[in-house]
Image (cartoon, rainbow, N blue to C red; front, side, top):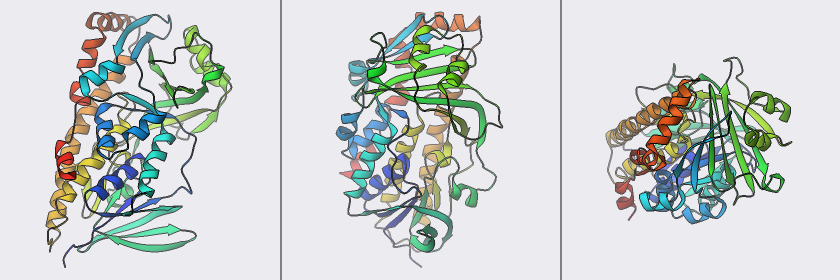
Length: 409
């Protein structure tokens, strides 16, 4: 039987799922998005949107809305966690625009999700189902059938494919890709938002700051037009610390005992500190099976040592829409065209993500070097200089999907 459905089903209404819905709609599909939460939260943490990801949001016409609540840091300042001494400064701001044609942004996750959700709601070809969880899915000759639990009852939805964008603990991955469960990285992230009005004038709210220490590092940057400073501290954690929870400021201070006064002054605020275990999905042989396909953290959750988690999901969305869009007007009697499109997506994205994984692993080692090797690292960074350190990221930040742009037009 022919696979003629224009409908795509998406499990998960996070950054990847909503971006995928917009990209697939632009490619000519009708999309149903199922998000298990009852609404989009206003709380959360910050994330970084590098030019490679922003290029996709620009193609979708929502980059200006994102910029309205984001901040473009002037630089990334690398700092010794114990002494507080500057190591080097990597230029962003105008330098990023000059080099990549787009700014490097930092944004509150909820603000980005709200922009995406607003665009989704305005799109007549996308239906957003809240409080709706995809419980099961079956791939067949006509496409896919998903069992969705909503309002205490189950309903069936059918479509051409199901995109699993339901996060690191993906239900669909567990159902269709057995043996690829996420693994604990051995690290945890402390996260908190510091109100800007509570900060002293000595605190920098124009740049992204990165403090390096043995077996730990921390990042701070402004969000929500500088009204808050987002703080993330990465530390080693036991594998049995597998549940996120809320911690006290005293616990936060104890976790970063001995760090410099600037950092400890920053975190010495009675805000909601959360302690999150960090998980990653090991490399998989493929991201599709039948008419089920993985995207974002469901496919490749990685440690946050390159600040590319959200960016990789956004890139996934565009490339998936690119290859699927080219099957839309094909009479696909056996589903072969869709299968080949999913295979192309999988191969292309797996190669890209593999390189990002290698960068992430390298950064983890470099950031967390013990003394005295860490001192050699600091000297090396100073000698290389910020401009050359930025240039080393060209392969990452200069990525563009010109094919997706052309197909949209």
